[in-house]
Length: 217
Image (cartoon, rainbow, N blue to C red):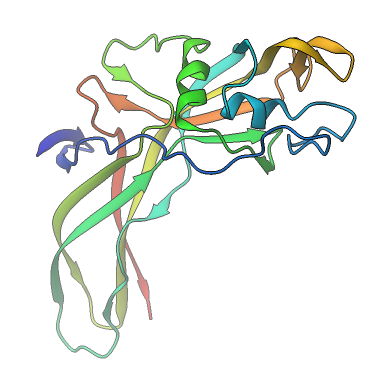
């Protein structure tokens, strides 16, 4: 069990879990499954997931790190009917993973092997105490003691630190696909392929902030 500091406290954190499991993907048929592309273009995402092209290279155009959304990290603790303060010592936990999208809405499914190739095209963090690995699933846990007043509820929330990357994919085929050897998704020099991955401390533990909130029943 490792620990990190957050808001003056030490957060106990589990080591990173196994990378994304391989799941069935399109094998690149005439009916393209690549988000944003029609049937007149190859399924470059499905082909790269299946390691079919000679090259699947990610080109990063923009990158930045910012706090992500707040997520519920525990069940709601209820003292709605109580007449005295209720003290809770509970473990809060949050699990997150890398996400891939086309634009800002359509999810792109990426295999473990393809995510390794994508990471090669991403720039390293400029912070010496930060690291990230696309595809890794990480979990943060913390045990705290908090009090809920009569007529109130309480809950833990966690806000992960996220590294955002925007860019495009360069895909080379050994034979022509729809008349071309080279394809650029969603376009050469564009920022339509987007990656959001959790930031970790240098030792691999998840970075972010845990907070406790209460509200009336």
